[in-house]
Image 1 (cartoon, rainbow, N blue to C red):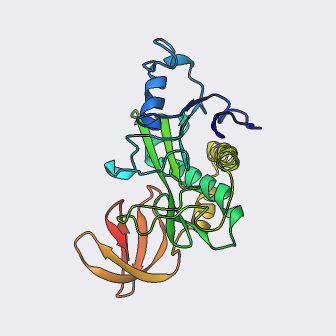
Image 2: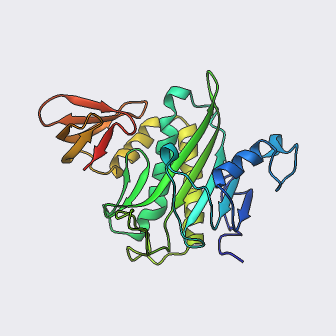
Length: 268
């Protein structure tokens, strides 16, 4: 049996209800099917009964995705591939980036104990870096109405035991590659526990506390570095913060502050 097929959690709701698959197309796709009552795992008519905090876990997925349809590549049985169902109806759509902050900080909470202070960062908006290399990606798919976020599918790919990566991914790394020989199960239980804690912090309305934790972990925060804007212009700048919507604020060395959405600025 896989080491992540059964969990020992002390959470109230996150991870208390879970589905494990040895092979699946995508954990986010399967979680959506479960939520809509279209999965063979539950049969029809179960959509209304899927509890908040339900988790789908897989050892391998054939259609894993990152942000904006990019492909998430992972060696079978070596990493963490999972999706979590949340229903943050208390959160207004203009503040949805706060959910991204809660999830990103929770992942940082789970991984950082394995390393020295300052070795693990969140790269805006939600990649996890270890010593400057990418170890994880997060994909959040929100279902919105006019005044609320009806549901959120939180997809996570975390490289744990994989130590060899395709030539086209020179910046990819894993915990094992960086010397942290931690088990997948421990990391999974740690992440789900931290996710519940940070989600409850969000639900309590502590936006400022989450923003502070996010900025403390943010890669290159208040450091001068080189960037490239989507028009091809290269500039020196330093990250000064975020808009409430999550857009990145970079002070330019030449003067002024640039405001950037996702894929509008490249870290060099």
